[in-house]
Image (cartoon, rainbow, N blue to C red; front, side, top):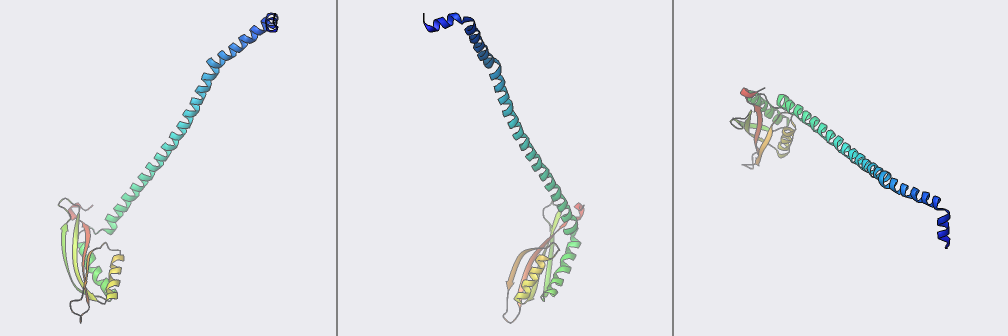
Length: 191
């Protein structure tokens, strides 16, 4: 009899119990431990995915709050523009240009020659109208530059549409033709 057969015969109970223990361990691993490990790994992956989704949702919420704050700030600034900057009606717009242009011209040492105005609504259904002003000034080049600079920096809402600088006669000073616009709320639609 060989050595292995003899050991198997003499220690059969012990070997069978060891073999059953190994089979029971393999079965327990295959049926309990491994599925729990997979489930646990899946739960960890889901937890990581949930944390990423939470961060993304928090970022979206922060962006939405910033958008709402920006919209509110824009609404406030627009209301301020309508109430404090934009002339309330045509007479106010005329007064703004009639008073501002000669005063700025005097400060810049420029001669105010003439002005023509024309008022019209932007569209038929518009809440705003536009006052077009065509003005002529005379002066030295540096003074005219200073006048334009002061006009652009003035707090009154006046837009320079066109600038024409000419000297019809070399013996006369330079002539500055300005096409200006200001907008105003139409009286029927004023707030």
